[in-house]
Length: 259
Length: 133
Image (cartoon, rainbow over all chains, first blue to last red; front, side):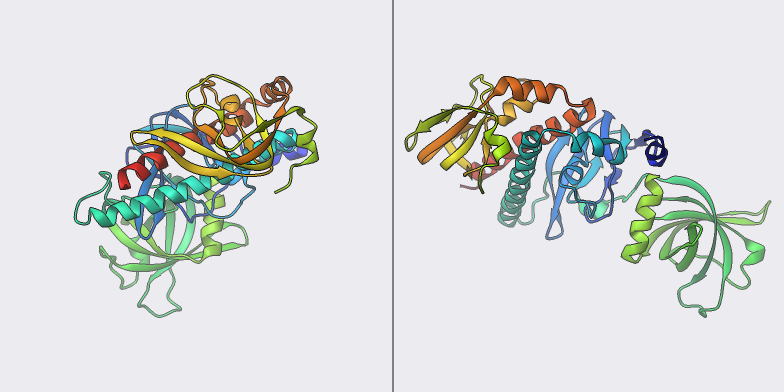
């Protein structure tokens, strides 16, 4: 029992700003969140459009569908902060034993609710796509996917990494240090003295390689969104958004961010 | 789908309904939970254009469980109407409720939340069907 307890990450509270993406459909994730304050919208994606299927108030949970279906795979819907909010994160290991001990009849009832809600969500999406075709040209729901800020919970880190611009020779390895990382991108600092002839520019795409944990090498490509030079100590801070990551790396990152 | 023997263990009686009989009325208060033993049951929502079927349930499915598991009120969120002759098992709601109440807080929160989402999504689906007609 004590052994088991050590493995379960503690309950943490995360703050999100209005518009932030909390969960992205298709991403790996197993955490369950309880809304402590603020409002969260649940969106289902289909054919490139997002349809809001629910609004969660304080006291409500998200991520429970994946847990109850025993699905440790990808998220079926996205969640976005509709206003500034605070969420409590539960690791499923905390709940698994309790769930297993639940009487079968309650499990079956939960299982049926899960099936019905999946059916209803599908129906809502189909209907809204049909509706959208009818209203072509009009904006829908006040939400524009183009404005997706893709802001995620950022974890502060200090990880050594190597990087190079994508069009540079493969053996080039420039040193950098990752300062924060999220599912959407990372921030890093580089020493100008270590950059050889390369001058980072807005829009440059970089190959970045790092170790999140010992023996867990992770590769990604990311585009520079902003940079800030600090001449006094000869460093440049870069903000990037991921442009490519292998599914295994994405999964690793998901687990890393959760722990 | 067959009816699980563990569910049968909760049955206190059997009830029969003829075609189109209203088993549960939307908006009424009640905490009976049924399991369908034979036949089909239509789930209907009241809309601005009358009663609308949003789903059809069959053997092994539960009806009436939502009111029991919700945190807020026990008002029936939809009507259940027999689609042809139906045989239902009435479950021991006292025992069910006791077992439910004994669950850890977080587990209860998860399941109540799922039920609440189901209720909201069903209402939304019904509204959208009406709007598209």
